[in-house]
Image (cartoon, rainbow, N blue to C red; front, top):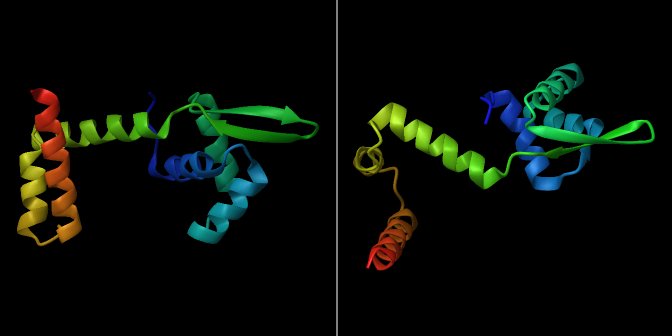
Length: 124
């Protein structure tokens, strides 16, 4: 997977939610949610096409864009990369940091416990 910038990720997120979309639909969504200009969004779309992160299909005079990257795969790759770079591949310091700074809600803790329980069952 090619590196995706934060701005390009905004375009991808729109496509993950509602693909296929025309460039106008992407422009409208990002103008509303992130105050991005049409020219900027179209540049981002072109970059993503060149990176083979999105594809297009021409229908008449209109291009419809769709993601080639699966959201789950991208999220997993980026999460692993972040943990590796920031915490030498160890998850415990990341979670401990959130816990220490009171950034974990009761729901977060319950979900983490469930995930750990499920993981332990799979290991048996």
